[in-house]
Length: 247
Ligand code: URA
Image (cartoon, rainbow, N blue to C red; front, side, top):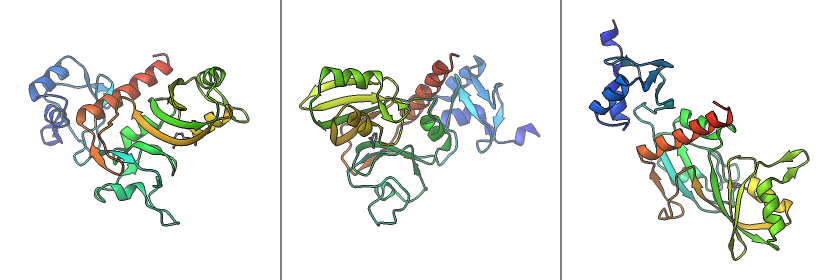
């Protein structure tokens, strides 16, 4: 009964933006496509609802109806589905249908890029601590930005008893603004890192998630991620995991 099962894999891959049907056939022939962990066959049919499809070990989002929004969050918006205090929520900034959720969080006062999606697989890839996708922030700080503070932030600082941050990329970009790149997502991490070296964050903006940045996206607005961006994000997450696990 295989002929009536699902859809042809090559068609599903092409619809997901992997390439033309011919290119997708070549990928399958080269053994670069797996279905549920097994190398796919040419002409194979798949069920997009239940089969897990990967190209070069990177999961491919094949469900029709998946949306991925990149939102530029303004300060004063809470990242939650509903707020008991009635404050504006991040969901007010995107269409109500289909229902989406945020990938990670930003504080009420933090501005900048956040991804909203109904793609559970991508969300899990990006938020799992071992995947370590880079997040870049610009932090306006009050206090004296000394070389030793920068060094400490780079090496890792204790943000609560027994909890030290992983090494970070930190640059003083002038005017008491630090560019900080981290791949963890501890609660209020950047603010607490700065507090640990006696700096108070007065404004915090997330400017990049993995390879995704967009200086043209106005505060309060959103755009769809391109299929290339979604794929690159998944690739980065998968590669980082492999590196961290020594595979
Ligand atoms: N670090 C913080 O302190 N706050 C955020 O919103 C994000 C990272």
